[in-house]
Length: 111
Image (cartoon, rainbow, N blue to C red; front, side, top):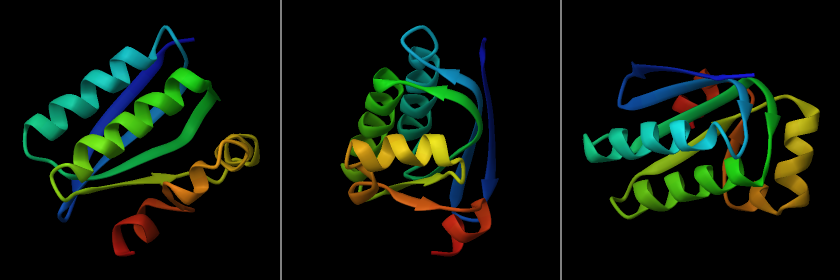
């Protein structure tokens, strides 16, 4: 399966809607998108993974890398996820302590 990315603005935040699979083959596409946003001065990011079917360690690494990039510019990266199988991955890896995980884009932007 492929990876789809859609980007839009909500106030001061840039929302990246991700769909499909984030794995060793597709993760570079997501990494490139996050790097381009940070290079363009977008440091408040919401990554919406509601339409993601699969997420592996490479994908998690891309999200962590994105978080480091925005934090280097006093920014933030929040994740929108309600899928239990993905939330379990965040919990097992301890990333729920690293990322602010929200149940909707609206709550991520408002937090």
